[in-house]
Length: 348
Image (cartoon, rainbow, N blue to C red; front, side, top):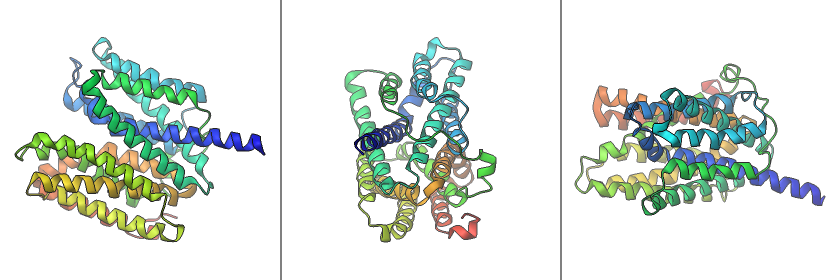
């Protein structure tokens, strides 16, 4: 019994570290994409595309059956690819593209294993909440430390990724159906629209905020949203089972409303307050969303990654068609679609 308890503890720690690091990588994307944009042959838009490549690659291996690499290689690829990205100007563009793809494939496979390892665990919500809270707090620490230490973000994140090498297997070997099968068997299409619009929401906040006086204060509101998100993720684990479905629906609605309010805000303080509120409701929702997906959690995570990968491009089209008011409406529509009962969208 002692041996089983220790093995379970090791697995749980591996799950939390894996999901927590994934949260750090995603939440620090603006700063490390900015570093990639300083490569002499990479424009700002191309650097953003590399970020999308990471998320898209991760979505494929998270929802699918991995990419056939042994667990140790998957773990080693994450810091290796981050180091290649950190070398930046010393690397050819083809190598940087391959590193972005390899990073996504490896992290997606590890994330899929971690979520599969939570299937059937009565404490799954607590583990996901702990991982997300940890990832958001570490992300905040990275943002605060970078200006003080003067260390490039990619080197910092590469160092953090070594934690993946120090933990055991985050779950069973990947064995879920490949992505084209998953799309026909319970892929959360309804939530995909919501995640696309959330990706668009976070992509254009700084650009929208430049129109306000004292726009240099906006980054502080964004940092505060990491704290509010950590609080939301922490509180998600404290919701009793009977109320989780109801809170999940209300938090989607609140995230959509606060997201739309951001792009209709007449002043910077109101914009900042809506950003902080959105961070809270989005991360209150997300652990409940994964927990409610059960064995389909890898597909649920893949929808999140896919949505955020496409959010920037979709948001650009919406803004070009109707400006920021159109983006506010599109965010509301994405939230409304996520509230449609699963059976009407062909999900189990």
